[in-house]
Image (spheres, rainbow over the protein chains, first blue to last red):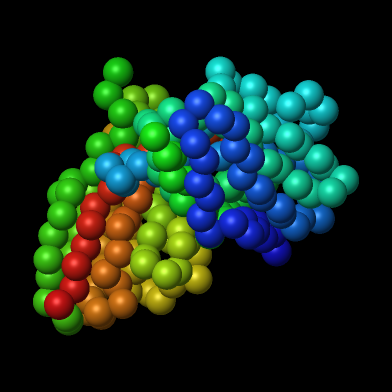
Length: 115
Length: 112
């Protein structure tokens, strides 16, 4: 069975600085997807970025980028130029490419932005 | 284009009662997923529906059930409510052949 681990329950960063959130996962599959979702106090889960396991290139979406290390089963999220609106819970999630398509979630990291 | 919509947004039920939560997926999405987000337990997969069929269910008792209608909307039913069923219930939809799942705003269920 696949598992996802986020070892940082809480992180804080000064506004405009860069922060990295960690995620590791365990799987025996070779083809899968990884995601970072953001959940602000409004509760709605918002997709931040996705990564296909077969792609070596790290995904980037504006100020958000990932460091995907397939051999190490590591998938960290870097947020550059942090903004107050980035404050939220961040969840790392795994999805198989075949068969079961539900998401397997990490426990989440609460990101605090200091003004 | 409308996103995933869930109703109601909040509700309070008494232990032993039954509840039905509703979800309308993004237009064109055939897959609907239900997740439970309980305090201290994180996000747990409940049910996956695709093309009207239940494709998979998580490790939840049979009193959690649901269905998907021909228009791909979905209901989640919980019978014999227990206090530990208090949680945020999230619905997500996706195209089966793509990876992204898009979420609704959730239904906050409180069982007293």
